[in-house]
Every structure is written in C-alpha cells, then in structure tokens.
Image (cartoon, rainbow, N blue to C red; front, top):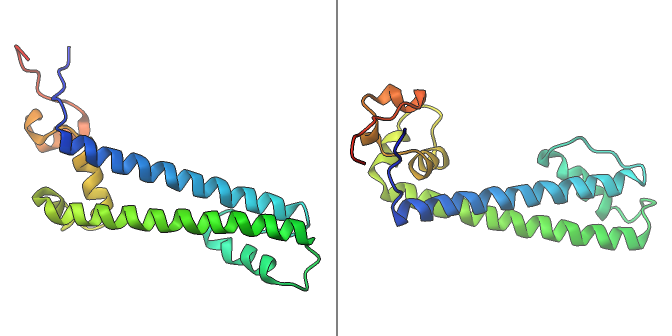
Length: 150
C-alpha cells in the first residue's frame, strides 16, 4: 500500500492556477478550430495551429473578400473571444512566473536547460515532496518511500 503526503494549501493553490490555465488554453484552441471550420465552409483554408491565426484574421479584415457580412461579424466575435483568452493566458503565465521567483526550488530547477518557470512550477505543484523518495531518480521512477504508520 502506498501512502501519499497531503498537499499543502499553497501547493493546491498552485495546482489550481495550472488547471485554470490548461482549461483556458483548451478553450482558445476550441475557438480557433471553430473559426477555421467556419471560414473553411466559405473556401478559406488555414492549417491547424495558433501560428496560422493571422491568415484567418486577414480573411476577416479583407473587405474585398466574398465572405458574407453576417458571417464576418460572427467570426469577428469569435476572434475577440480568442484575444480575450490570450490575455487571460498571459496573466496566468505572469502569475506563474512570479510564483517561480518566490520558490527556491523553482529557481533551482530553472537553471536546468529547457526548464522555464512553467515547468518548474508544474513540478512543484503536482509532484510529491522530494522527502518522500529515497533517491532523486526515484521521483521519475515513481517509487516513493513506504513509511510504516503513515
């Protein structure tokens, strides 16, 4: 039987920030895909990915295109929602960056190549405390110490 250390309120709060960010990112992806599919119905094709959003914006802004006015207005509404979600994601990223500056372990993890504030704080928010492992490598093997009486 494995015993799990209870999470502190601070650790739970950090996990909530990540879960909210994940949900907002998923909503933005959903809206981008909806915009792509709506414009596809009128013959405007763009590859999958947020990096191709400017191509869709150009179609909406081009008054000389044959996109009907009601569709253009509706799609611009979707575009405003995408922008709003992008702003919310940026705020959450800034919050995560601030939290990473307060944490000694997050700062230490960020010295590793390829680890930024988001990855460092995700480890801190979701991984069990290091004290529950015999060796550091056990963290990645998922083998916590079995303590009697816990």
